[in-house]
Length: 333
Image (cartoon, rainbow, N blue to C red; front, side):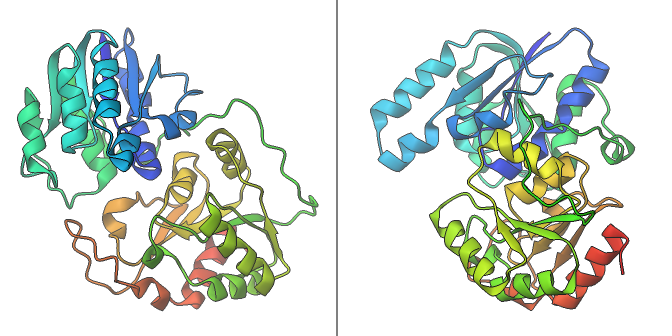
């Protein structure tokens, strides 16, 4: 069987989708799984042993540049990748639905019009599944793949999953190896109101005896990292990491603390303890809680269909609650 998964972006969403790979391989022994993803995220997928070919597109670049010619070239490129038995669109947007439709295949699976934000996307699928859009995203992904491939991914399967991100080489962690726990703080996110206050992160480093690191992915996040360092000498700023390096780095942490953003979700994928902080986005939907992966939400009433980027309620999450959960997960006083 040849299948291709369409999940082009963003980092955290791709991670949440990749968990299905190990279960597909468990149920279907003779299967080739290809993946279509935005060029900027290919490093997350290239080392995965269960993926046959990673096909890249630059749809977002075409949109940003408002380039019709670039968009057409991307569509032609996808059209030529070959024929498949089944195409599974795990993105659920018009752009991903169009990509899924133009790939030669026997069947194209996606969510129905009531289960996605861009309902018109459903007209491009030959087969659809109804799952409440507010349902946990990992459960939605598991349900779609289970339906498309006639297999069963259960809650127990997801709880007992194997780590599913891979790097091509080990990142060399520069620390004193003093027996302390390694904690990484992730201050950045896709928009400002998802970010936890820098001063509270700084205060956290003074309450827990550990090796603290901070990572960043763009210039704005680098400024945030430097501000955090200025408030706490305990912080080690990590140089900019590739996705491949980031996977290796996260795998060496004792705990990851950050907001609803890709690097924080990597901890869950690697079975590393984590605390995810939620303000304007729904914690019950955007993460999968386990014995070692916890989340703390603000008291905001979040509508998953319409995110309010002016909701800064994440700042109201009590530092004391984060400290308490940190000590619980690390089993320290």
